[in-house]
Image (cartoon, rainbow, N blue to C red; front, side):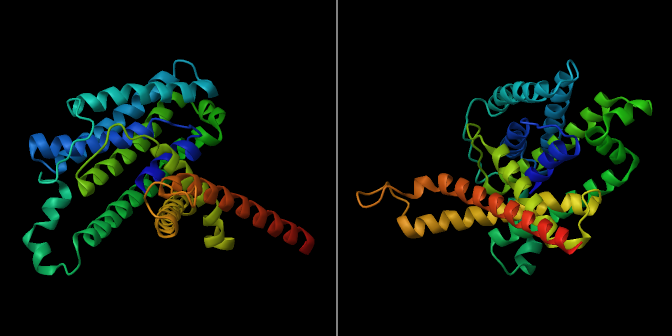
Length: 311
């Protein structure tokens, strides 16, 4: 959810398609691994993850401010994406898949604490889920507070009316950099928690930006139906709910496709009877998302037609 929230801030608030989030997320997981294995510090990894995310966002904004064109948004973020891949590899000393199962990560300390043993009745996975919810709720509250402040108004103006920001005497490049630093810092925080829970990270793994984009698209379809007539995109509360709802539905779709394909066809290599196997779940997942987008657009068009006829 933090991955989708950070990407939403850059994509919809700043109108900046930031590909850097792909490596910012991995940088957070790498920070969790480095802090646990070398420093034996759980919260130190969170600070390093946030710093790496801010550094990635600042580097992207710095390159973009050289030439502010729509194409250069993608180019600057892609350049930082490639550069941070090398940075992440160096941080883990060219071990692309570090495993730190016995290291004192953030979640390990919580699970093994005396308070947890005496009061918690569920398993470690359920505890990780509730801790993640607390982290997401805290981050969402902080983001809502920022967007309602004077800084947040300036950040929203960057994406909506940058000319108006120039007229007021403020620099668009500065607020773009601040927004990208905040967005990538949130994404890196999500990567740090992901590494703390799973206690392993794969630097060669890519495609997190696809999950973030799918969450944003699904959230933009589902959020208006949940809020009904109370939905206003200019409302901070409705705006922040889009990536949260979308990320939750995207995770639900992934779980349904994962277990559905494994149940119907098995997770082994395709047999002679069927050309479909568990390895094709990404294709099915893409088709499901495309179907959701198409159905949402069709239903929205019919609702708009019905409302026009009523008027």
